[in-house]
Image (cartoon, rainbow, N blue to C red):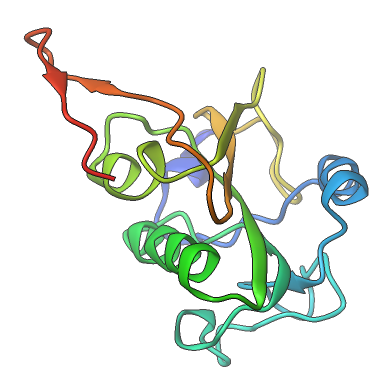
Length: 164
């Protein structure tokens, strides 16, 4: 297995956020809930484990989310968007996700609904990884009342109407 193969593998989807990176975000956002974590990798005192099923829970407070990077990522982002817009007890959700701007889950859940998108310069090295991720990552923030940040365009150059 090559040094980057582990990042491309579906054997592991729970890559832990680097401690210093999270600490910097936490100093700005003061998170109160980690919505998808485990006792061994949570960054916040209150958290939902896989057994708790964060997708089935109501999210309250200032939420942090580093979701599994597999096929379910779209479900996690749809949930983050929903909680931030429809749950008054949820102040906001800050998400660490791959910057896969060409995917359906990005267009369906991020592009028209995020109130802030930050693209991380360089490659993040997740806890336990031997090298930086082979893909760029972004911080996506959902909160009530923010305007959409981006407009889409087709490969043919046609503007796509904002349906968000």
